[in-house]
Amino acid sequence: MQSVSINNLTFDEYLSQQEVATIVAQVAERINADYAGREPLFICVLNGAFMYASDLFKLITLPAEITFVRLKSYEGTATTGKVNMMIPLQTSVKDRDVIIIEDIVDTGLTMHGFIQQLKDEGARSVELTSFIFKPDSLQYPDSMPKYIGKSIPTKFVLGYGLDFDEKGRNLGSLYVLRPE
Ligand code: IMP
Ligand code: MG
Image 1 (cartoon, protein in one colour):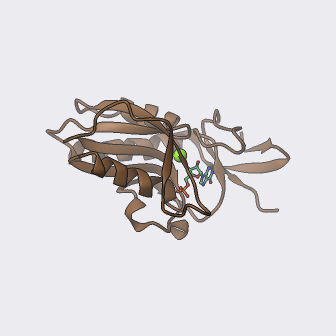
Image 2 (image 1 turned 135 degrees about the vertical axis):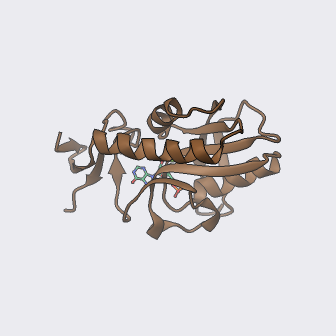
């Protein structure tokens, strides 16, 4: 599909399924090399990262584990980077090499709080992979992902797990909002 329409807005294909697959394979290759000899614990951040996490994890050749959280960040009155866990972490991160899997890092608020929490809980190391990164939006430098699928300008994207009003997550390609 070249374009899709959701809630009267039009989105144009930005990364084809083939391009997505190539990007994910490149990230997996880097992680496999960097973590050789270790047993990292991947943490998939729900909801958006489920598709990226699934594709990425299949390509990890290490004796890795995966667990899941669902996060909600609050801004406004609570600009402390506090993150609410809608589904809390079920696995201990103490002394673990943790790799967080995110769909997208925008301002970095969500990851800012979560990375600090994992360090407070005794993780040996914490790194972040994000399928999409918007460098021009970043406000929390510690949320800069080490393993970036693709950096994009500050535009709204959906598909491949990412939603607009909870719609569009099921699209296999990545789409970008068409300018008015
Ligand atoms: P951050 O805390 O500002 O980095 O925002 C992260 C969250 O905002 C992501 O996990 C997404 O849920 C949402 N988000 C940011 N940009 C987009 C986008 O372009 N499309 C869909 N969701 C987005
Ligand atoms: Mg997310």
